[in-house]
Image (cartoon, rainbow, N blue to C red; front, side, top):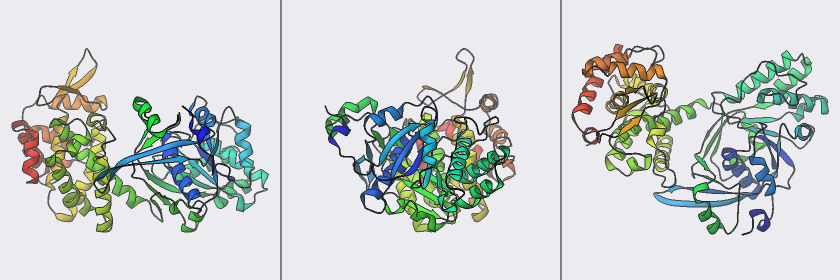
Amino acid sequence: MKTINEITKKIYGNYPEKILQFGEGNFLRAFADWMINSANENGSYKGSIVLCEPIPSAIQGDKINVQNGIYTLVMRGIENGKPVEKIQKITSVSRCINAYKDFDALMSLAKKPDLEVIISNTTEAGIVYKYGDKLTDNPPESFPAKITLFLYERFKEFNGDKTKGLLFLPVELIDYNGTELKKIVLRYAKEWNLEKYFIDWIDEANKFTNTLVDRIVTGYPKNNIAEFEEKLGYKDDALVTSEIFNLWVIEGKKEWASILPVHKSSGKVIWTDDVAPYKMRKVRILNGGHTATVLAAYLAGHNTVLDFMNDPVFTKYLDKLFVEEIMPTLDIAEKELETFANAVKERFANPYIKHNLLDISLNSCSKFNARCLPSLLEYIKRKNALPGLLSFSLAAFIKFYQVKRDEERDLYYAVRADNSQYVVKDDKAVLSFFAEIWQSKDPAEISKSVLSNKSFWSGRDLTSISGLKEKTAFYLSKLNDKSIRDVVAGLVK
């Protein structure tokens, strides 16, 4: 069987190298690079991408270079209630370099007049300050130090020309990722005693955006690659799979969008003055919907998200949760919230993605505090009443953590109604707390212990909320006495 590069003409990878991308992994190749390829394809952009592996041990770049930068993206999901598969060859990558093995090549990119954009995905731990990084390192260890060195090389090459500043689009999953990157870059520039003119150039000539990204990327389908190769008719060692849904929210000046017009691509791109409402929408509806549902669904006998999406009781629960309790807490246009919530439900029902509920349950204590509690508190503030389903989900969270310590296996486990055991994963202090309080048989006492534990709730004592302790205890009693699915069915009838 021939390889993808043997049968595919490289169309857009020969455009000027306008984009440097730190991160050659699955996410960016299935997200940003797909959008750029689409913009090239429809004629709204004419630029290629240089990928850069930011760590010395990366190996994906070799596979990409062997295939001349060409690879396949397979997008699968639900659209308008029907399974859909879309296949796209990506030909906008010119090459992949490694920051450690190809340091000179990286620095030479800083001197290219065509370069306009830097995209990055160096994981949540990438945008951090690391003591000891120096200007003379080839390269420095931290990503922001690499950027500082890269910008200094560019500054010197173009004699501080302010038109040669770059647009930064970091997609690392931290709040205000662009603001934080700029702050650390400026810190290195000052610590390295670089010219004030350069520090001013960083601040004034370069454009740092804050971004929010959303797409599930399932990566290389190693378990069924033979099926893909038979369908495609070629071999592709860099093939990547994803869901169809995508969203890139970019906080920056609207005129910056013309530098990289991915909003004119097949992707869903929003340029905005404030990314915060979109982040809140995602956290409360998508992430909050997960956390408020999966623990009860698992206790009811379901093992994956798709399992509970095929159960009409839980789909009714999710609908009611979104429409009646979460969406009313958000100051975003109702139609926009409805569209997003419907997209979330289609994503949950994606038959091509296996989301294990136990995987999602990891660290549910902190997740409930971040994702569900804000909706619960805001609902009470606006309605002067307790939200039924969010209160129930709090009780389901407590029930899920009905754990016992297994010293021999060094873990905490709980038992479902069918007597099957499951391992609960969280901080040991959290698990130890639940193991102790569940020695009580009194739902009221258990509810009080959990709700008054300020370390769970960012310093709040939730027993101060009128009726919440009693309502949680009431649901705990129901969960102890009845099947969990029947309790949920009673909530949504």
